[in-house]
Image 1 (cartoon, rainbow, N blue to C red):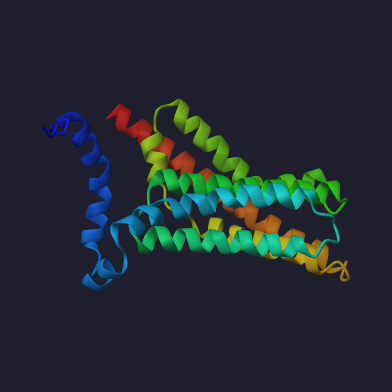
Image 2: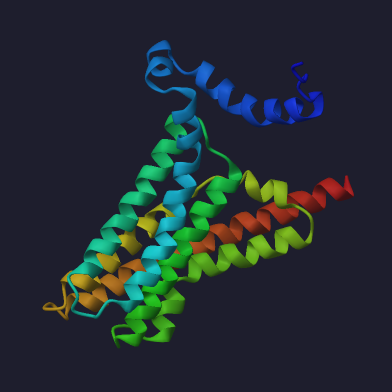
Length: 223
């Protein structure tokens, strides 16, 4: 005698699988034929895995010697993973605020660890690192305060800013320049100043956005 399936267990399985099936059905016919359900489930995890990979690469960067040819390779792989995970998430419809948060945290940790490695190599001073990370410090403080006052949903909806994107690009160029332009010491202050300027501008932009949001919240509460 064949046992009937447990309705409760079957309901749990359906809730887990249904979102993936919906994304597959939403793809064009050719893509459905090319991307079976198993592959779709695998693709769902890839962006998060690539984001986590950047943290591993950052730790590996610290253990590489200053003159190691693998340091630029690590940075290039990390930058490539940042581009690929975002593309895959958008391409296959698996974007989420949790994935975006993991991506942002991985980026910040990678940058922080690499900059601290430069400090240990006597390439940067601590105050320069603070300037370079001013945008990230501002966003982290704002996120912490927003979480404390219970406005986290509003923070999740906050879109990327032009100065924030410019700072991310400038930071990548800065790190690569620090690795490749050791023979041109006069360029170092220029690169640091340029990247720090973008960071300061992005910090001011996010701070104004944060203050504007608090004012809007105050008006809603008073109204």
